[in-house]
Amino acid sequence: MPQSETRMLAWTQVRRRPKRVLQINIKTNGAQQENVAQAVTFSMRLSRSQIRYDRSMAITQFSALAKGKTKDPSKPPIETGGKAVNSEIAAFTQGPFVSRLSACSALYVDFYSLLNAGASAQSSSDYRALILQHNCLAKRTSSSRNKAWKELKARYLLDPTNVLFRDFLEEWRRCTSDQERALTAYCLLALNDCLVADLGSNYLFPRIRKAPTEIRQDDILAYLHASEAKHPELKEWTRNTTIAVVRKYIASIRDFGLAKGVYKKQTVRPALYASPVRLLIRALRASRNGDLKIVRSPWFRLVGLDTQEVVDALSELSRQGKLGFRMQADIVELDLEDRQR
Image (tube, rainbow, N blue to C red; front, side, top):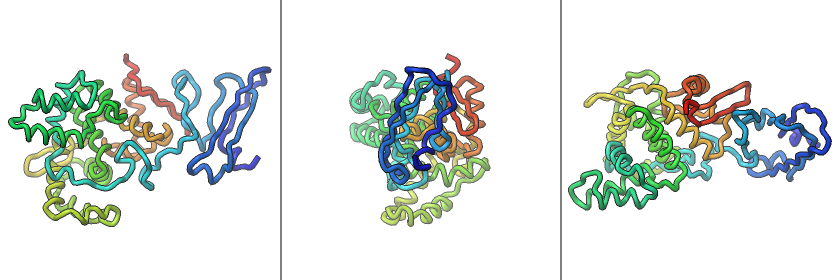
């Protein structure tokens, strides 16, 4: 068998047992087609619970924590920071920047009020009815209610059938403080908005690390100008639109607790909270990233964590009982259930 095929899976040494044969079919697709020309079928005599993947595919290991949570190796993971891919999560597609923030800020206060009023909402229509019919946001006119619905829907999805919003609701209900709720909502907004995600992980992240650091409008304008080669749609924005987006962005990150100040905004480094971290993990998993790739993902910059700090942060949350985490070499086990329950 060619070496490129044998490297895909490595099996631990096991004792032979008669009449116990496990057949494993490996189908190729995506980038794997370069190394494997056709499907490979292995038939081996295996002992129970003694299988593990090789490091090149290593995501998890069969154990009490990982039981029943095997990964499908046929699904190629999303390359963060690489070429755009098909994904339900906008930030991971690296799609075009949109100027929705030019109209108004992130509207986090309205979003918070809507979630409190819609604790039992089962559909997007329920949220819409709460705003338009029941006026849960206390808007004076029907036009302002319609605008609130349109803007909130665009920013936060408001659809329980959407995987990202469904995972967000699960984490929102598990939040234990307003600061944790604000950071979780910020992650949802960033994951659903390529511009907010890019600014958060590239412009804002180093300033959060050095908090308190002043956030200057001119710095963000310069950053967007430098991004025009990668995002040519920015060239189509008027000067007024770009300035409005920047101003609303600065106001929004203050509402989420990542900055403070009225006239002069300075960054605030957030504390380590479980719900926003778990939401990022859920989003990465929904985009077919394995657990090993997740712990090395740069998307944790959204909550102020550098790539080298993710393992320590997950270990701390595991110690607190907020999730289950274990890592040995390239073998990773992640369980998002609250271990204190």
